[in-house]
Length: 303
Image (cartoon, rainbow, N blue to C red):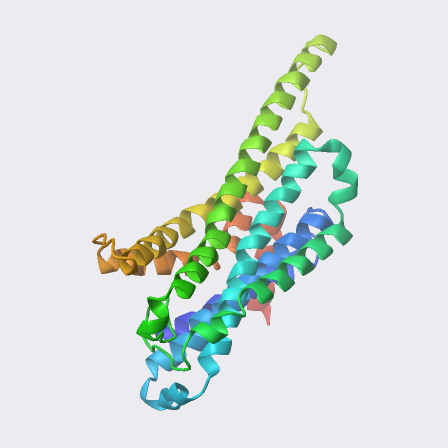
């Protein structure tokens, strides 16, 4: 049953990719590029982590042969690379919205379909290169347990200075720095929107006594809602996993901090859940996405 439930999750991401790729949600091509890339990365995390790792766990006896094949090493590189892409695509989307709202002179040059494609390609390549070292640090044996660390590591490696530095850099790059960047860009975006909103309201009051709608501010408000919902969801669902990972490393270094096992498992679950919630977020914040999703559901029932 656990594997069956895991197989249902990619369907959600695939539906999101199809709806966004059709370009009928009222979003610019630039935004659509980022959202589709995030959905694809999330889909790969679900497949590589939840499905490809859960099957050997559920059917452990049938997959004992994996202990003697270096599949786990490749698995680890792919999983960490796709996870990095999922996280950093969120950062690039946040930065793109920051530029679009706060940097009017740079907006026309940066917020384009071509720039989005280049940025996403660079992030993908760097994420793959960054995680190659996991192939050499992990052993070839699957841990075959339901925990974030699914490849066995020898004691000599796990307590070595090299492993400590590599793991520290890994968690600093993902997700500690993305946390800081997302919070920074969101704070600057909010500040700019509030200042611009006050200025436009004063200008409207001078030009007309009647209250009228402002299309520019309405577009900014919609972009702000989508931005904050996506970035806020990322931070909330990743924070527990990040704290547990830091405490685990401190335990290895001789500074044990008692932490219930269920907290670590909760962090692991929430981190994976972050790859499955974007469809719900789009449905809540985007009226046209809800319409397209409804049409897709109705069409599936008519088949």
